[in-house]
Image 1: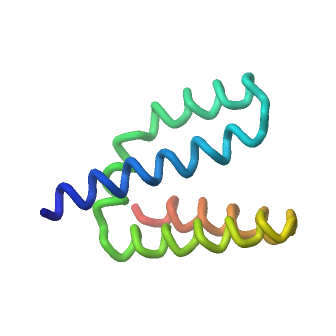
Image 2: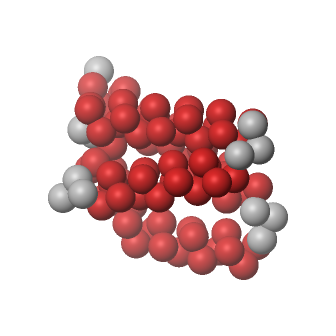
Length: 91
């Protein structure tokens, strides 16, 4: 059961990031991001299996979407930076 939930979360998480990257409308940037993402995919799998981190990550994504809807680029940037730092500090 936990593995199924974790797999679903990883799929949704990947879809969320793919959507954000697509909004850039920059094939070159998307290619670079996907190359980097391939290198850290194992790391992402591990941290997303940690329930507390996965919950916080999801909350971060909701806040980002709200800021995007409000066209508040400054807040989006701040939230993304904090989100990345949280991911880096998991290990």
